[in-house]
Image (cartoon, rainbow over all chains, first blue to last red; front, side):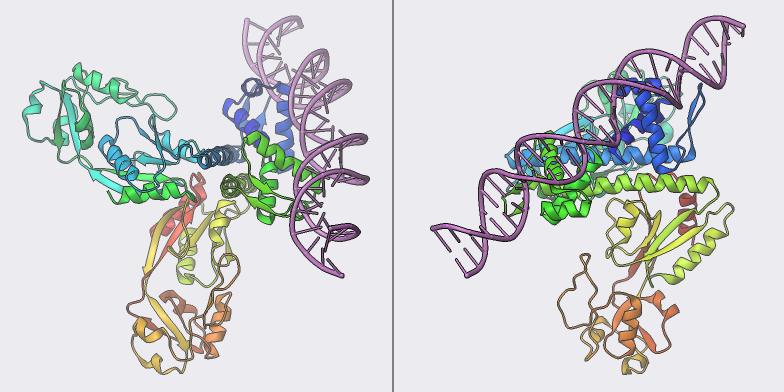
Length: 282
Length: 282
DNA sequence: TGGATCGATACCCGGGAGGTATCGATGCCC
DNA sequence: GGGCATCGATACCTCCCGGGTATCGATCCA
């Protein structure tokens, strides 16, 4: 199976429309039809049910969609990591670390400092991304290492090492009456009148239903809280970089948040090993 | 990057010889040289240092060897799993479970029984393999699920769930004086006079140096122990299927052996989920 | 029933993958 | 040190296959 065939199949399987898929791939529709037919012939498996009106995945087709995406990611990763290895040989950057914007800021800076202090440390580029993207970036080679928060972030097929756990705070507008309390309980902060929890986007970009406002990043979230339109329960380390117009109160019975450092399996990089070692010694 | 290019590169990188690699691939040497040159041109990276006498990997080349193998495994896995999904739709087999011959026999049969008793259980084919092969089989799609014994088996990039831990026994010829003891300690069994620990092959098939006999599987091992040429410390479950002419004594301070059930990440199969569920309920 | 939509088919063209012959460099051996 | 063997690169040819355009055939809708 050639990667070209896989790319074509994934495009059709995602669009469920040969015309649009061909457009996305930058080719005409007939060669795409032929390529898919040939792939099916070679596999000896029907991947798509097609009438002239509707295209649908067979059982085998949906398996190939999932597996094919993973395989394409692996090929992309091989490409990117090879290019980066060549750059590294010419003295260039070392590692790309990816984490969610606003998460574990303090831990991250401590980690970067600790690693930079090691002899022979590589440079570390920090890449901030949205929710749930880290795994993808690790898998297709755009990043070497990530800070994740299981179980919110999935860690399937990724090697991890636990770094820290921390409690959570509720973040409120500065003047809110609850901010005079030393601590609160979840029961106090769910359904605060007028301060609903915000809704974060799912992986596909859509938002769940509910009363809270839609937010895409922590800047939006803080803005909304400052405006008195929302509240949020966040890991304790967010306090370090909280805006002046917000206040935070510990929530005793909120689940503790763990932070792990994660990297793709079978990585042989010395730089990565050093960073992980520095992280576990924090 | 096309899988053909990757296959070609991996062949050359493993042989470090264009002629032999071409032979292995079933093509002539010139197109292979050109394909590698083109791959290097497209990546913009030197992968091989070649004189007319010697071919060596560059730093980037060894990265691509590791990553390329992983990518090819992923492509193979996509192929195999798609084919098997199509078979499954026609009522055919369900899962392939791989484990080391002779290991966790009792656990395995309990697992198979428990799963078979579930409504809608798929058929499970059992595949027995040598040391350290399981990970590969899982990764390239020849198996769906494995029983592993970390830390002896590597579990990088694989999802696992712990099933059991058990102590270890020393296996001795039936008449050996130690077999009258209720239990022993490691100090008693290392360096038993005339009964050295056997040497198992490494991943590449070579054997470490040492006094013990070379063994490739448990049948060979048992034969040698029965002959009074070796002894071995094995998981307690081996007692169930021990030969009559062997005896086993618990070793109190031997490290406990854990058995995990392992499967490739991002598996969506209902059958696999059912098997894992059955396993964790044992 | 006629038109619009959409995948499949027919047919053609060009690039590239693979082959053979040969070159050029390097190490070895007498 | 010169002749030779080894081995990767290059030159050149062929043919297959990937991609394009034109068109067909089926299906849904008005």
